[in-house]
Image 1 (cartoon, one colour):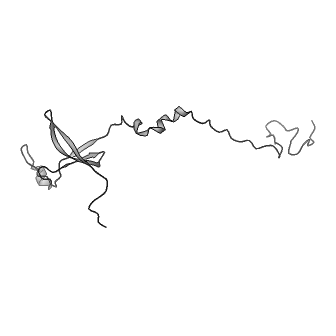
Image 2 (cartoon, rainbow, N blue to C red):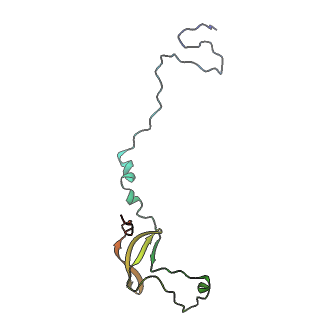
Image 3 (cartoon, helix red, strand yellow):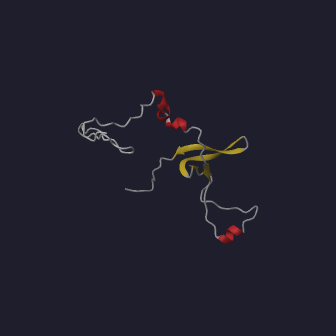
Length: 130
């Protein structure tokens, strides 16, 4: 075996398991870039709301609220009346996943209760002043 250097940066006569060195002036190896997606492959990203159309959400309609002492809560029986903080004809609140979404009025539809939406909540608190 010949142990002489035959070129700049090259190792000749290396034993098994040794790492071969490449010339210093060799071009750098660039990592492979992933192929660009097909135009149709981005269809899901272009219509995000359409992909969520079958997601089920919890909707709650709040008629009113009240606070009770524990002794009053324990005394509730069938026929007891719990007074709420709303007047007759006041709008009810519609929540979606615990977030206020709208206001509406209670209606009867084929012997079942429903809510007619009268206003969509803007998400801003009108009680805050300047």
